[in-house]
Image 1 (cartoon, rainbow, N blue to C red):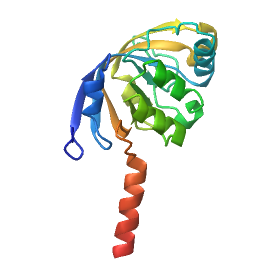
Image 2 (cartoon, rainbow, N blue to C red; image 1 turned 90 degrees about the vertical axis):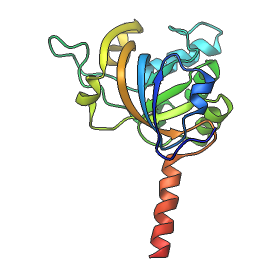
Image 3 (cartoon, one colour; image 1 turned 30 degrees about the vertical axis):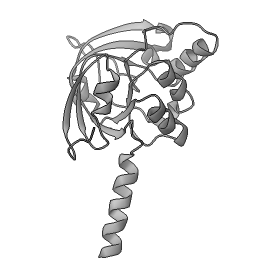
Length: 193
């Protein structure tokens, strides 16, 4: 299923494999529905739960995890600034979570080879959100509930209701990597100059 270069995709969670296969690296994605936020400490606990055959704090099938720890909410708002965390910090845990049914993760920065392989094998996605735009991204989050590990504070697992949450597809189910693609194109332009 080829995608137009830089297509715009609107996805509603939970995601299914057919939807994931329609997204290619470089596509703009707008997510609607539910996604979960989690960072390092929560990932460590979730990975331990999977290793011990215990359930995760939410059903992972078709879900999206946003690597984010919010700042405190202003009065009248469901969440404070909600910018992405560097994804590499979750690389040790991501393959097991993709295997458990997660269909996409959102963060910033490149992923390890093991994570990129898991994305292909599990027919999933890695999406990037814009770093430094936490206040703007928070506007796309309409409701927040802590669902696990409240003692972790900002790193607790949160259930986020989102509307038109923007991201860019970096790694797709076909093995393509937007960062590598951009580096290659830049190198080719520099070599031809």
